[in-house]
Image (cartoon, rainbow, N blue to C red; front, side, top):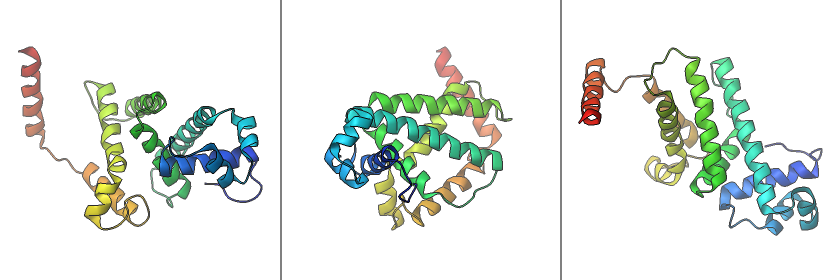
Length: 199
């Protein structure tokens, strides 16, 4: 995330909220805690955002737009750069929002699926159901972050922090770069599924 005293009070509040919401969840992060972390008064926080719900709305919008920007930059470059600490925090925030089961989290997942469909349309990948393809791919990728505690226990290092995060991502790249089914196995599975639909 950004650092330095040049941040506006609004930006400092938003960053503090994203960090605390990601760590504790929305319900457990109070207005007072967020204001204290941002170095402002609770009154100034309410002046800028109105309420915790208003602040969360602003955080959701900011986090989603920043993650999309970072992912688009990766797609355009076609290569990994240094892992941005801001990205890790935003990713934790978005995962926490989904885990909270809020309408906002659902809306963000839907938006992510729509971005996935747009990405799929620009590739040579084939799918009879692009919506399902993008949705399931998104859910599979998010599953790594939802199960951070379980992965951390199994890997012996925090999967949400470097170097455990890099180890997890490296494994996912290895998985996505090699087929787990032969073409014949895939065809057989698809035909079996078609028969179930028709029965």
